[in-house]
Image (cartoon, rainbow, N blue to C red; front, side, top):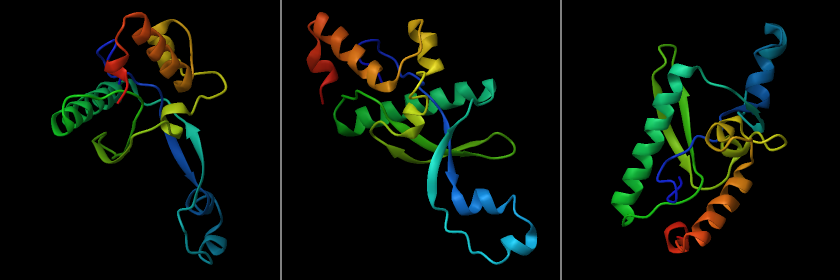
Length: 148
Protein backbone atom coordinates (compact mmCIF):
# COMPACT_ATOMS: atom_id res chain seq x y z
CA UNK A 1 0.00 0.00 0.00
CA UNK A 2 1.32 3.43 -0.93
CA UNK A 3 0.45 6.29 1.41
CA UNK A 4 2.33 8.67 -0.91
CA UNK A 5 0.11 7.79 -3.89
CA UNK A 6 -2.89 7.02 -1.65
CA UNK A 7 -3.56 3.68 -3.29
CA UNK A 8 -3.18 -0.05 -2.94
CA UNK A 9 -1.09 -1.47 -5.77
CA UNK A 10 -1.06 -4.95 -7.24
CA UNK A 11 2.51 -6.24 -7.51
CA UNK A 12 2.10 -9.89 -8.44
CA UNK A 13 0.43 -13.26 -8.13
CA UNK A 14 1.79 -16.72 -7.59
CA UNK A 15 0.82 -20.32 -7.02
CA UNK A 16 2.60 -22.35 -4.40
CA UNK A 17 4.24 -25.43 -5.83
CA UNK A 18 3.71 -28.21 -3.30
CA UNK A 19 6.03 -31.04 -4.27
CA UNK A 20 4.00 -34.10 -3.30
CA UNK A 21 0.54 -32.86 -4.23
CA UNK A 22 1.50 -31.17 -7.49
CA UNK A 23 3.89 -33.92 -8.53
CA UNK A 24 1.67 -36.84 -7.55
CA UNK A 25 -1.31 -35.62 -9.55
CA UNK A 26 0.73 -36.27 -12.70
CA UNK A 27 1.98 -39.67 -11.58
CA UNK A 28 0.25 -42.92 -12.56
CA UNK A 29 -2.37 -44.00 -10.02
CA UNK A 30 -0.37 -47.06 -8.93
CA UNK A 31 2.60 -44.82 -8.08
CA UNK A 32 0.61 -41.99 -6.49
CA UNK A 33 -1.40 -44.35 -4.29
CA UNK A 34 1.78 -45.38 -2.44
CA UNK A 35 2.37 -41.87 -1.07
CA UNK A 36 0.63 -39.63 1.43
CA UNK A 37 0.94 -35.99 0.38
CA UNK A 38 2.55 -33.58 2.84
CA UNK A 39 1.82 -30.29 1.05
CA UNK A 40 5.47 -29.24 1.41
CA UNK A 41 5.95 -25.93 -0.40
CA UNK A 42 9.10 -26.11 -2.53
CA UNK A 43 8.61 -23.11 -4.80
CA UNK A 44 6.31 -20.50 -6.26
CA UNK A 45 5.21 -20.03 -9.86
CA UNK A 46 4.15 -16.65 -11.27
CA UNK A 47 0.62 -16.55 -12.63
CA UNK A 48 -1.47 -13.96 -14.42
CA UNK A 49 -5.08 -14.13 -13.20
CA UNK A 50 -8.02 -13.62 -15.47
CA UNK A 51 -8.77 -9.94 -15.93
CA UNK A 52 -12.19 -10.21 -14.31
CA UNK A 53 -10.48 -11.32 -11.08
CA UNK A 54 -8.14 -8.32 -10.88
CA UNK A 55 -10.88 -5.98 -9.67
CA UNK A 56 -11.84 -8.45 -6.94
CA UNK A 57 -8.25 -8.89 -5.80
CA UNK A 58 -7.69 -5.13 -5.72
CA UNK A 59 -10.92 -4.63 -3.78
CA UNK A 60 -9.84 -7.27 -1.24
CA UNK A 61 -6.51 -5.47 -0.84
CA UNK A 62 -8.19 -2.10 -0.34
CA UNK A 63 -10.62 -3.57 2.20
CA UNK A 64 -7.72 -5.20 4.05
CA UNK A 65 -5.85 -1.88 4.24
CA UNK A 66 -9.00 -0.12 5.49
CA UNK A 67 -9.54 -2.75 8.18
CA UNK A 68 -5.93 -2.53 9.37
CA UNK A 69 -6.13 1.27 9.53
CA UNK A 70 -9.40 1.10 11.44
CA UNK A 71 -8.19 -1.50 13.93
CA UNK A 72 -4.63 -0.23 14.45
CA UNK A 73 -5.00 3.51 14.42
CA UNK A 74 -5.09 4.82 10.89
CA UNK A 75 -1.68 4.02 9.41
CA UNK A 76 -0.61 1.40 6.87
CA UNK A 77 2.35 1.35 4.51
CA UNK A 78 4.25 -1.20 2.50
CA UNK A 79 3.89 -4.56 0.80
CA UNK A 80 1.62 -7.34 1.95
CA UNK A 81 0.19 -10.52 0.50
CA UNK A 82 -3.33 -11.91 0.76
CA UNK A 83 -3.35 -15.66 0.35
CA UNK A 84 -6.49 -16.77 -1.46
CA UNK A 85 -8.23 -19.64 -3.15
CA UNK A 86 -10.53 -19.24 -6.13
CA UNK A 87 -13.30 -21.74 -6.74
CA UNK A 88 -14.66 -22.92 -10.08
CA UNK A 89 -17.23 -20.11 -10.07
CA UNK A 90 -14.42 -17.54 -9.60
CA UNK A 91 -15.42 -16.76 -6.01
CA UNK A 92 -12.38 -15.63 -4.02
CA UNK A 93 -11.72 -16.62 -0.42
CA UNK A 94 -8.86 -14.88 1.38
CA UNK A 95 -7.65 -17.02 4.27
CA UNK A 96 -4.34 -15.51 5.38
CA UNK A 97 -2.11 -12.48 5.01
CA UNK A 98 1.60 -11.83 5.18
CA UNK A 99 2.66 -8.33 6.14
CA UNK A 100 5.95 -8.35 4.28
CA UNK A 101 7.58 -9.08 0.92
CA UNK A 102 6.79 -12.71 0.08
CA UNK A 103 6.72 -14.75 -3.12
CA UNK A 104 3.32 -13.41 -4.16
CA UNK A 105 4.51 -9.83 -3.93
CA UNK A 106 7.89 -10.41 -5.53
CA UNK A 107 7.58 -13.48 -7.75
CA UNK A 108 8.94 -11.56 -10.76
CA UNK A 109 12.30 -10.93 -9.10
CA UNK A 110 14.52 -11.11 -12.19
CA UNK A 111 12.51 -8.95 -14.59
CA UNK A 112 10.33 -6.98 -12.20
CA UNK A 113 6.58 -6.86 -11.85
CA UNK A 114 4.55 -6.26 -15.01
CA UNK A 115 1.80 -4.89 -12.76
CA UNK A 116 4.10 -2.21 -11.33
CA UNK A 117 4.97 -1.31 -14.93
CA UNK A 118 1.34 -0.31 -15.40
CA UNK A 119 1.68 2.21 -12.56
CA UNK A 120 5.20 3.49 -13.27
CA UNK A 121 5.97 2.83 -16.94
CA UNK A 122 8.62 0.18 -16.27
CA UNK A 123 8.78 -3.14 -14.48
CA UNK A 124 10.37 -3.08 -11.04
CA UNK A 125 10.82 -5.43 -8.12
CA UNK A 126 8.95 -4.85 -4.90
CA UNK A 127 12.23 -3.84 -3.26
CA UNK A 128 12.66 -1.13 -5.90
CA UNK A 129 9.06 -0.04 -5.31
CA UNK A 130 9.68 0.31 -1.57
CA UNK A 131 12.83 2.34 -2.27
CA UNK A 132 10.88 4.59 -4.66
CA UNK A 133 8.18 5.15 -2.02
CA UNK A 134 10.81 6.13 0.54
CA UNK A 135 12.53 8.51 -1.89
CA UNK A 136 9.25 10.16 -2.88
CA UNK A 137 8.25 10.49 0.77
CA UNK A 138 11.59 12.11 1.61
CA UNK A 139 11.30 14.53 -1.33
CA UNK A 140 7.81 15.55 -0.15
CA UNK A 141 8.86 15.81 3.50
CA UNK A 142 6.45 13.00 4.33
CA UNK A 143 8.65 10.21 5.71
CA UNK A 144 6.39 9.93 8.77
CA UNK A 145 3.58 8.76 6.46
CA UNK A 146 5.52 5.71 5.25
CA UNK A 147 7.42 4.70 8.37
CA UNK A 148 5.44 2.55 10.78
